[in-house]
Length: 497
View 1 (spheres, rainbow, N blue to C red):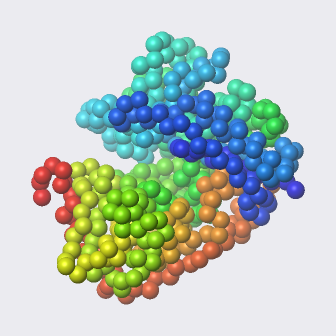
View 2: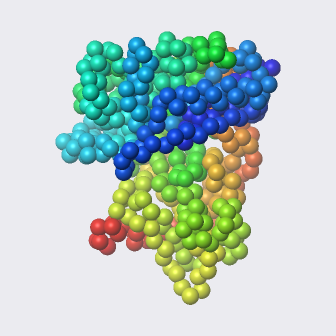
View 3: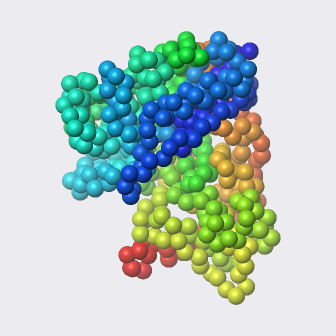
């Protein structure tokens, strides 16, 4: 029986999952790799270790599934985005550790560019806000700090890639230097309107065009694997992890949205074939290109999502395990007037206040651990609701339902609170490995493993649907008090209130 192999290269581990024709999981293999922190705020990976861990689990998962390379119709790749690798074209050896998306070493350069007035031009072309998060400033740092790198780059002797590009290069034995539009759109060098590398952006960041990969669609055959154990399997689908999850959740029409409840929350909304720019400091990104059509998404992130539950467990010691928060929070009928703003690292979209700090408000002698636990869960849902309000203001598209994944999506109480606050259904799928599934779908469509998008849309199944049950006046009252609490937490670090 033919299957699809999805390679899910994440920030802390490399995973491989085999999916069958029904979208079911046949086997999973995973391996963590080293996180390198050379200085405060710097985060690196060894690109060679990323490759070794990813090819290792790819071979391992075939063994677990009892399959041979001949049983695999195609490989799909999804990856941590923005992480930057530069290597020698002749030797295939990286010239520096990969600089990870979390790395802040280029923040000063980015602030300089913003002060010089480059922000509006960059957003107009890329849909992004100038930030060290994206790849462009990381490439520049490597070329400026590795001896001889800039001259070698100008001479065409070096290659740049995000993690997808690096894996394809290694899988094909250096035969293919390519990326897909979704990953290209995270570099801050790619014009999301023309769908081409942009000369003005390249000049701004001092990046020579000679090092850039060819940009291709998200679903097409890029080449064949040459690595032992996987030889001759076509590589046929690529998307950045959040875009792959949007596709895996089958959010194919404008307004369809997914939220990943992890340490933070990543919310993406399909906005169709026109790249609407955000007025709410959200990011506009390419979602995918499939069948000659390019789809776009609005993206926003909440810094502290599921991490607030970890803090309740580890920082306050109110629970022993993360799962314990649900029964504790459910032991009281409401939050008792308590609001917890988890601005432990400032506030992300749509507030963007790095000086905000966490706050618990409304505490009385009657406040219990259960009220604080409930306020913590509610804080996750409040933040996601604020983000969806910002998306609605940008796109003008009403939310019909929110599809969810990530660890905290398993918390039924949180999902019900989310549905109540949104006034729209929250839908949890049967298969929550949506990132890898999205990459598998993109690959399978390219080789005819699945006949059409309609066929795979029919595979998407609901585990549970949470319908809003709270009266709108009650929701408005809760949100007004939440907004007041957020206002109290803002600008705390600067001392201005």
